[in-house]
Image (tube, rainbow, N blue to C red; front, side, top):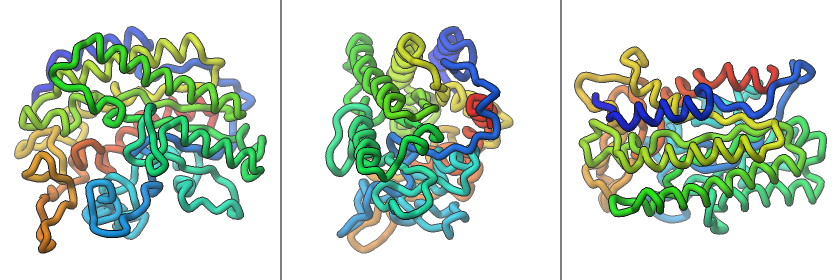
Amino acid sequence: MKIHAVCCCCILLLVLISGGHHVTVEARGHSDRRREYKLLVFGDSFADTGNRAPATSDKTSASRMWYYPYGSSDSAHGNRATGRLSDGLVQSDFLARIVGLNECPSPYRVWDRNAEFSGVNFAVAGAGALDGSPEVPSLSQQINQLRRLVDAGDIDDSDLDDSVALIAIDGPKDYVSVNETTSANQIGALSQDVTDEIVDGVRRLQRLGVSKVLVNNLPPIGCQPWRSLSTGYNSCDNKGDMISIMHNTALTQKLRSSSRGGVLVLDLYAVFNNLLGDSNSGFRHNNRPLLAPCCDTADPMGYCGQEDNWGRRLYSVCPTPDQTFYWDYVHPTQAAWRAIMNQLQGPIQDFLGI
């Protein structure tokens, strides 16, 4: 499979900027060792575990995560759809295990203030750093939700000091307008706006008292199936990679120049490319393109799980999701998320002192 030269150049640039796969803007102190953390999750579908409410009528693209085949590999939840946009667990689930929790804290939509506090998941599928709505709140609006819980006394200062936050923004919502006619200058300007919002979110969390913040950079958007479809899933899209490299460069520079410490950038860009480029990663097949989604549709405007008016499937599911990197047009499989977070586990544990 041909991952084009731009990917290699982008990896090199990020390495030059960050000094490696992970950008740490604070050195860990030994006093935090053995600390038990609670987890606060913000962002989009990479981390949402059920905040997008189930459909009240027919299944749609926006509610597909509550229907088969989503969740079909999730043995932890009875192999059923639970509102996660994957065949199983997502990034926040694996992060919860890394910090010592049995599972990701409850979604804000169903959070119980009377339960023992282990954190809250505010992430919502379809969210972005920029504009939001009551149904799909932006990053800033999600942090407002946390602020209201703090103001109401449902979360106290000691909970925040013992918390690690994840900001998981993966790009499609904020960069969906980018097409072949979009200039590099326009992408650059948009990336400045998006990263300004993310950095502002980090600052707000720190002002609230959150002690540690993990921030995703963008994965290689050009390799996601919604961008690589035009190549038959055989190579990454140049314009998509331009989005990722401009966004990640701006994010790294802003966090380094403005952060007060306590922030770790999770380099999804490098990890995704490592796994996609490694012939021994377990995600390569001779009979299908590497970038092809496991759950695919013949209609490029269709979606995984779509059915016609008679209930007949308009999609197909590959027989080996455990050996496939992408589940649908955007999201990794459970197996891919496990591999991704395995590569990030060491840096996260070092950063948190656990």
